[in-house]
Each structure stands twice: as structure tokens, then as C-alpha cells.
Image (tube, rainbow, N blue to C red; front, side):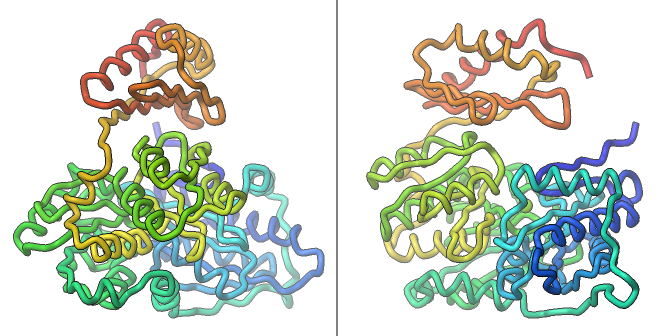
Length: 459
Ligand code: MG
């Protein structure tokens, strides 16, 4: 059976030629345009910038979404192949009413997606996302007359503008004096040009691998350990100080230490936060599924951690509301509001290099200076209607837990925590568990599995 097109808060994702076609993308452009017009009481001429990752299907979708937007009378600026944070930066630089990113992030090449951003550079809040979806489903579009259709133009400045903005917030001279040797794996995604320019400006000696933005991914594109064996090997061969891996839209960063060891995406935010809190004290925001390392780091700095539901828009909005100095998600996503309110691998690379330069320590020394935990991510197939029953069963097994119900249920206890969330698209409950060691984490996983017995459904 063909997969269903996924439409979520941040946009849509599907397989080109199957559930995601040019006409669907054009309709989605019409829907986004129609929505933006409702936020334009002064009837000003509006503009949207559109960037894409390097997937071969990107041009098809970009042209189709642009056609939809143009038909509602909104001008479009094609900013070409660029990271997701690059679009967030550019839409504000160009005073756009919104932005569109054509990307399916870390998903395989046959997928692509359309991600929407509002004029503040953040994905639409849930209510607006619902409104856009309704316009799309009902096809109630606000078309412009033939003389008022939008105009399409190109802008090739995005790489430079984005990297200048990152550099404005980090002391490049201090990093450059160290002449770090870096291996950068861009997985033939969108981040190669920005990544290489940033590292050049930071005075690094860079070996760039998989840096052709063809979208033909050199390995599975999610920056997790099993997909980065090539990078780990290359770091050792080159005797590099650090290895960096980007996902195809370069919002996530994974780090490999100088011994060729993948240190885990959870460390990306932890290391960046350690550096920022060394410089500036202030609250930190992250989602409920992110490691407790961030609480330890914030605790040492005597600042508070704001936990939000999963989703970068939730983190970004919490950062804005609480004046956070840094935020992000445990999947290698670091947000610095001074650059843009979305996860940004360029910011993460700059902060980690700055942390190394400032302390004179290696990546392995810096990561081993952070208390470590063992994390398990798992899922159970079950009727999500039974979610509350599972939660109450788990709670019977774990007494004295601190409960947070903002996004599914997170239970915090002395030697760990667990977070259970139901999927919006599949009959699945996602399980994230973190504890002091593997044995304990597995013990808690068994508790959840036991609680889920009787609710499991067969695929
Ligand atoms: Mg991504």
C-alpha cells in the first residue's frame, strides 16, 4: 500500500511521484499564499523566499510551490540550494512574509518535503498550521487576477549572508589561531557550501567529503553512528582535531572526536551550551526528549532549563519568551536566536570550535567532562487510544516520579527519566529512556514493555 502523505505543523513530506506530486505542491503553495494574505490587512505586496536542499526532486517542488504562491499574487525569491537555517536567515534579511524550505531532512532520497516558515523565521504555530491545512484540503484559494500575479526572481547571496551572520556571533580570530584540522561530511546535501565557507573563515584546515550538492547521498543521511563510519575513519587518517557531519538540510550536527569516535548527537547541544554558559548566563530551552546532560550543565551554571514539547518551533518560541541564551534539541540541533530561530549546524560547529579554542582541550576531553548517561530510543506498536492506560500502568511501577504531561508523558526519577509520546501518523508510542547506565535504562524499558503488554497491535 502506498504511504500516506504526511501533513504536520511544519509542512508536508512524501515520496515524489507517488503521494507527493507537482500539483499537490502547487496547491500547497496556493494554500500558504492564501493564508499569508489573511495576515496582510494593509494589502502590501508580499514576498516569500524559497530554498531547497540538494535532492534531485527539489527543483520540481520549488517550481511548483512557487507557481502556487505566484498565483495568489505573492512574489517569490528562489535562493537556491541552501540549509534550512539559511532560509530562516534570508527571509528576514529580505523582509519576506514567509519562507519555504524544500527538504525531507534526514529521510532517504526518494522523499522530499515542503517546510513553511513565517516572517519571524519560525514554523507556523499549531493554529496557523491548521488554518493552512484547511485551505489546502478545501482548496479555498485566493487567486490574484492576471495582472496581479506574483513575480519570480533569484537571489544568490544566501550562503554568504548566513555565514556572515554566524561569524558575527563568534570570535573567529581565537579559533583561527588554532588552525584546527577538520573533516566535514555534508552527505552531498545542502550544507557543503555554507560549511566549507564557515570553516575557511574560521581558519580551519578542512577536508570536505561528500561535498557535491547532488542530493545523491553518499551514505544513509541521518547523522547517527552507524551511518558515519566513513567520517570516523577519515578523521583518524587525516589526524584531524574533529569531524563534523551534517544532515541533508544542515540543521543537525553530529560530532566525531579526534580518536575517530562518534560521540553522539546529544553531545552537540551539550557542548554548545557548555560554551555559551561559560560566556553568558541565562536560561536554556530544550524539548522533553533531550538528555539530562543539559540539566547538569545548566545546574553548574546556576541557570534554569525550560522543557518544551518536541518540535523546534516549540523550543524557539520558549527561547523567545524566556530570553534564553541557547536552546535546541538532542538530535544535534542548536539554536542561537541571534542568528535565526531554527536549529543550525553552522552555529553548532562555530560554538564547538570556539569551546575547543577557549579551553585548549580536545573534543574527547571536553565531552568526557560532561556527566554521561545511557539513552534508549524505542517504540511499541499499539492502539494509541490506549495511551493513557499505559501511562497509568507505568506510573504504578515507578513511584515518586515527577510528571510532565505537556507532550505525552515524561517521568523524571532519581536515576533517570522516560518520555512516552504517541505518534500522530502511525499507531505507535515512542519511548525515550535515559539512565545512569545501560542496565538501568533496559530495566526501565522492560517496565514500559510490561505496561504495554495487552495493548500491542500487529502491523
Ligand atoms: Mg534536518
